[in-house]
Image 1: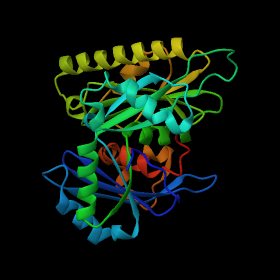
Image 2: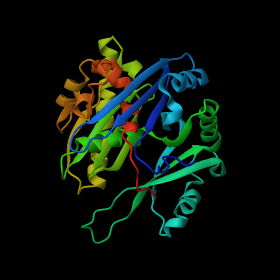
Image 3: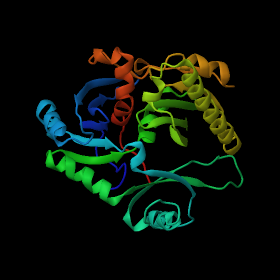
Length: 314
């Protein structure tokens, strides 16, 4: 199994993600010309992150064996790098990228599962270098995740990454012809993405976690907000230089529970900053618990991953 493998169908998915304090399960139904409907959002507390017992409960309670399952890697479980796209036939692409990664990974490339994601180029440019994302995870990690689902008799067909889950949500909120920046936080830290025409163009990690954002000391919180703002400014400036043909309309702040963060960013960034909620993307009629900000933050990436449909990937 590779990362974010294709699926033959787009229905019948159950997304299962592992958090520090338990396991989330989510299911979404896309509706043409309307918000996607959250059909299921369930959380199973657990003292261990990758709990076979929690998966067994999910299987029993949700009849999960009837669905094809996807899951997300956590922030520290993979590396996402930008590389020059090799000028080779498509069937040789991953091999060529693997060779380029051999000195870039913090483990041996022979021990890596690798996938690639194209970064579209400016159609109007006469000549422009072409880049792509390379995603690498240890074979042992992928195999252990497969074994975990196998023990619970669940059909794990897709292993995805948070960037793609966030991309799925951002795509639904884009304004036609404009790029969209989105910032979310979880236990692994902050994740900034920029999408344009439904494609992921930039991903940056910010070393500030949700636990840190719960800080009550105003001076420490001020320092954290300064750090976030500086990282955002640097990333947005870098993006503007590299992709000057993409006009980023605004930054959307995903539910975080961070008191005053939206107002701080709005006052200190050069682009408009708006706070979003899951209601902007999903019909939550079947999931009233998701009206709570803490629950929205908890399920943000799970439901983003659940939005996946058949991808055209390299």
